[in-house]
Image (tube, rainbow, N blue to C red):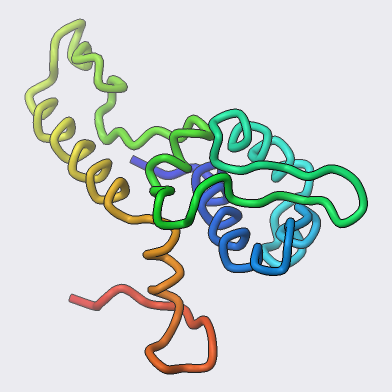
Length: 149
């Protein structure tokens, strides 16, 4: 299973929006510049995000995008789903026809893994990602690395 840039960029752009919308609507050009994502690609992603009710837009001078709901109410899995990013570890897209029309020997394993990943991502909101980036009592955002095993 591999996440595509579509899902990664959508989550990154939504987090950027959440971090910067306190100053009013955020132009996509600002997100594109800060995150190194093509403006035309962001326009495609935000069309889908707007259609799914995750962002709203304001046209004209001073226009841009805002979150349509509070960051606490937008999960990572919802953002990914809005841009048609699937979380599926099976070879068959979850259809169960991976071995000549029948489920392969490990189909249930990969199906359960896919569900665990979905549950994990459903439990993380944009607000959670913001908190992960804020050091306690610190001056501003930092990158948080996962613990090393």
